[in-house]
Image (tube, rainbow over the protein chains, first blue to last red):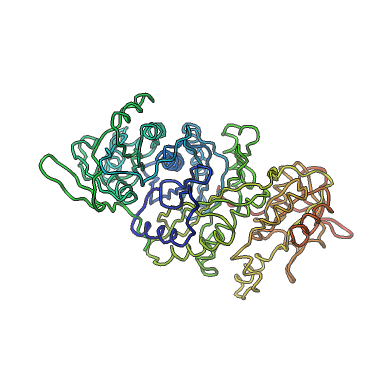
Length: 312
Length: 312
């Protein structure tokens, strides 16, 4: 779902191995969302102060917003729309006003992103932590777009610039003030629900949201699909002044990355939804899982491991 | 949902006041679970080390079990059965083996309590924290049993002894070894799903699970229903050696408390499900919200505020 660092994938994989296989049509642990027997999507993500956000740099309302937004992004990454959410907030004692400030962001996100906030639980603990679970559905009778459907020859798309949130983080860490668009991307990400629907309607074969950085996230997609990918360096949309490495490895963008065989159909679907066309950044290729970064006269074999929580 | 301490209810109430009213048939914030438009039940609860469990006294697997069980208990408290769950685990760095030990308890609970664990997220943070969200459904086309349906004259039932978990906690705090049933109740609570179904089928008008202590939890039920309650001290099932005050105020039992107008019908429903009959402990009475503890020759007016998280 989000924020995976070293050891997490191994833990999740071991958990999955010990559970019974889900029934046909049900997608269990291992994609952006679970898919239930009735087609509903179900996602969960936690944001923890000091790990996923820093209250020196953002407001508690930003953290509340982001906790809803990153879960809605998981729904968007299946081509779905969010319906209902529940939230569990852990609050450090002795900080009057913190709960309501987080609540501001939760309510704003629920209202603006169109998800009904139907339940809540608060507990006390050492640091602010916000966990949201969201239910959603793929509209128009379409199937959810999983990570595992990419085929050799598919074009790889991203829905917007990569690295803006990282640029903001780099600026904050260096004591500079980030640009307003970069700060907005970091603190108030806007999940690409409309883009996810347009991608699904345009024939997307696999999709993931870019939460951990494109190289890590497309690595998961390639892993699930049993394919490799070539990314054209010049085609990756990124902010001025940011290196290609930071653009590919920086997380927190919450754009979508998807694959589709018919570029014209994708563009038509986005145009019909009055959305800017997505950026074609590369192609799915055969072979073992790896990511080739292509320039006009060379290529680089990139690691796809990305940013994993070290949980031992 | 669980573990409410001072300030939490005010926060949740303010959150609810700022959200749009849910559509007809939908139950939002304020009951054991949310009820969605299609009748599905949706609950979330977090367990935080140092707040809800203590790893000096229980295993990480116990904590994993309990995080699933307390959520299933919320589903049971509406008369429902659990279907699917997602889990978000926050793990302190540098504790190899902790993740898998928690996973042991998650898998055991999912398997034994009949809920499909379909999604997971792990993050790093200062203390172990486990948040589970569960979806469920009320079987046989029945409506969910809310907190707000109790009427004057209804009998009040509890499904089992109260105070066992508290007795175990008291023993542990005093350096004594708790009795095996008390320790099991504290560390491996068994949610009363079958009892909740039998109560609903037996005409229950209101129901809540006993997570914060009967006096607090029946206070919520009375508050929601606009009634008061008289509890007969001698009728409250409690372990030997535990005071009535500890039995009424100690949390973590996860028995169910429900109200119903027809005692014979309740008993018949439990008998049909091959369950022990629930304990009739009192009656719903009119008047402002309050709890009267009745003895043969006197009564005591008890506070119902119970155990709230102090979140300022």
